[in-house]
Amino acid sequence: ALDASAMNRWLEAYDAAEIETAFPENERVKDLVEESRFLVCSQLPRTASSLKVLGKSADLHDAVFDEIENPSVTIPWLTLSPKLWLTMIRLLSLAGVGRYGRSLQQSRVRAERAADRLIALAEEHERVLLLGHGAMNWLIVKVLKQRGWGEVQKLSLKNWGYGHFCKDCAGKNF
Image (cartoon, rainbow, N blue to C red; front, side, top):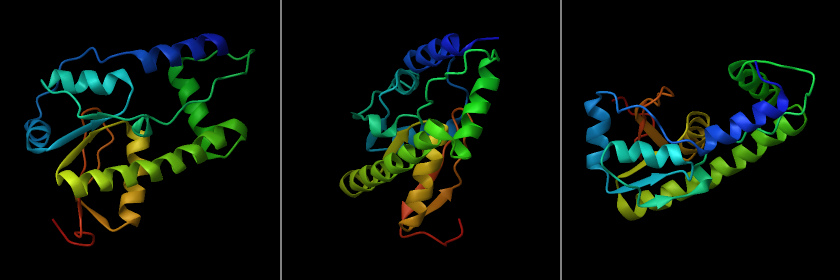
């Protein structure tokens, strides 16, 4: 179990970490990477190292695609496992409590900017692949759908999961 200050250090180390596992056998993800004309990732090291596992590097690293930020924890008397801390932080965020709620609001605004960036890149390069992070990807997808983008493949939030989206295909069955 970690106290608040130890959890804050854990979060910093997690954001600075690269991935440590090999790419799971998923031919469709490999195909999507190969078919893409422009590769985008966040500025967090684990996205760039994920592309490295695939033998690729990003054409663009942009903090707008970084995972939703977890505000620092300031409950000094509480000790929890990292998993429980993260669950509590996310619940506080969804409930709109204090700085945790502000973090979610700021992430929604950033997701709008991220969707704008992806749309512009897709207009320029046609086939763009974003290697991003679960919760931020989910927020970006919500914006893309609002702007008329359709899901060819529903977004999976699992590690190495993916979604496939296209303009002018909203409402079509694939």
